[in-house]
Image 1 (tube, helix red, strand yellow):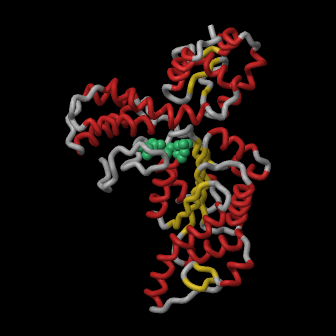
Image 2 (cartoon, protein in one colour; image 1 turned 90 degrees about the horizontal axis):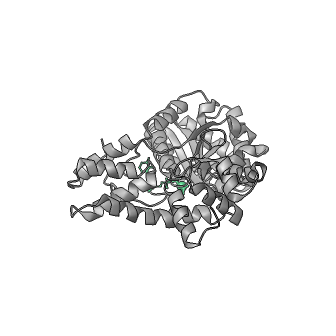
Amino acid sequence: MIKDNNKPLFHPTFGSRPAQIVGRTQVIEDFAQGLREPIGSRERCRFYIGQRGMGKTALLLELADVAAEMDYVTASVTAYSGMNEDIIETVQRNGAKYIVEQKRKITGASGGALGFSFGLTFSDEVREQYGFRAKLAMLCDELERHGKGLLILVDEATTSEEMRQLAITYQHLVGEEKNIAIVMAGLPHAVSGVLNDSVLTFLNRAYKSNLGPIKISEIKSYYTEAFKKLGLEIKESDISKAAEATKGFPYMMQLVGYYIMKKNNSAVDIDEIVNEAKEDMVSNVFEPILRPLSDNDREFLVAMAVDEKTSKISAICKRLGKSNSYIQPYRARMIEAGIIEAPRTGEVVFAVPYLAEYLRANQLEKSAVIV
Ligand SMILES: Nc1ncnc2c1ncn2[C@@H]1O[C@H](COP(=O)(O)OP(=O)(O)OP(=O)(O)O)[C@@H](O)[C@H]1O
Ligand SMILES: [Mg+2]
């Protein structure tokens, strides 16, 4: 059932909140279950890994709501410089209403607890002289006194001094039995950087989930219900075709749904709609993925794109005229970047739908060297 929340049923924009999170029921349930685990449990420290457009930001937004219903004050931040200050401010902002309300109820007065001037606003002394860890510990204590835990959500997690500071602080606070949990999300290569960082090693014990494609059957059900709600009459066979064409990619699902919606019941040609959606994929997904790659990386991908589905490493070697050991670093780097996957030893496949097709078309334009 689609929630009645007045959000547009299709909204193909990165970082936007979809009307409904499709196909992540289990992921969300696991997360909620994790929050019920005792303080310090591995399940309370989660890492969601997903390729561009797989729905990391959308999921984090949803998880923040789920946690809020479970008596957690949440701080959602993006891992950029200033992140930890942002965490403190967001906790203060999001948590204040509970503190003030309770105080009023009990004493009819307002005023700060020790170290706070009002609600969750620090006294001048604390604000000026205390560090991140002490401030966060104080906020946890004050929230706990009002029956609230703290959940920090970090999007686009990557290695940085501030991530290290946050990781160390989290560990300390867990050691002090504070009711705190943390959720991070990032692209595969950023995440592997985080996981290989010596200071951030504890994150290796974090509960890691890969956000893969959404099941086609779930997309079909959503389309059916959403089109009905929009008063659109779309044939079942067209709905199936549209759902299949998304290949389970959430961004593609939003795009295809959006273009069908825009047609507003005038003759819908799914092939035409899918082509329109693919154009958005080029500028918003493929180009950002390919831009930072070296020429050799790209040649490797173009050599892969010759195959319809999986590619044998031996075939890629042949096409590039290179040895297995020469191409191994490229293979490893592309896997790390989440652009390709290795379903079996000696084989690789594209992780992003329609990228192979795009590379093939582009390569033709450049009159390829690949045979
Ligand atoms: N489970 C989902 N159900 C429905 N729509 C979704 C879902 N996940 C993501 N979307 C939609 O797909 C698009 C891309 O999602 P999002 O921005 O969350 O991806 P992302 O993984 O954070 O991408 P990036 O790596 O570029 O930050 C958005 O339009 C979003 O609303
Ligand atoms: Mg995102």
